[in-house]
Amino acid sequence: MVQPQITPPSPFSTGLTGRCPRCGEGKLFDGYLKLKPRCAACGLDFAFADSADGPAVFIMLIAGFFVLGLALYVEIAYTPPMWVHLVLWLPLALVTCLGLLRPMKGLAVALQYAHKAEEGRLKK
Image 1 (cartoon, rainbow, N blue to C red):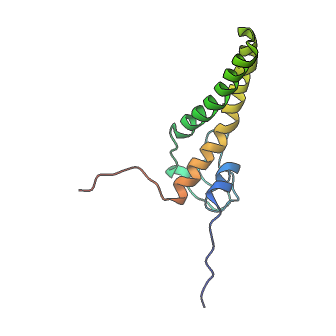
Image 2: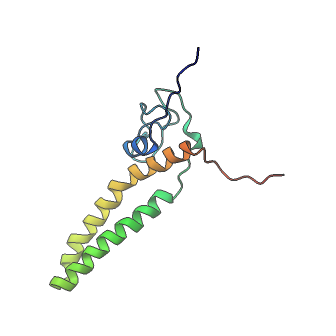
Image 3: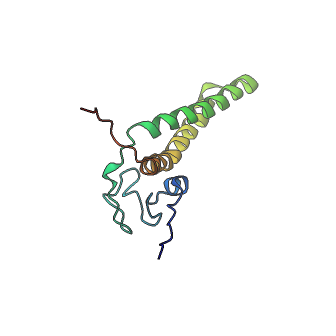
């Protein structure tokens, strides 16, 4: 008897929602950015996951483009005083960066799992 193939969940849906990349059930995070040691549902060890600074760099580029573009538009169109820029753009930059950081880290971990990415090694 042939057993049916179980298709793994999408790395995008599991990563962005902070779920286990193998089963899609267990939680990935043990805090805001700290990964759990293993999945509570399927037992997958998350030791393979090392997203390093990748998600933070992408978030800074995305948020910087978005916030700086808006700030530049407001400056050219309305020429407000500097305190208006500080009141508007600092909170928006913080909310944008912190709001996107966790989903992007989850996505990086899920994509590492889906593509079986690991640390590079030299062949001898």
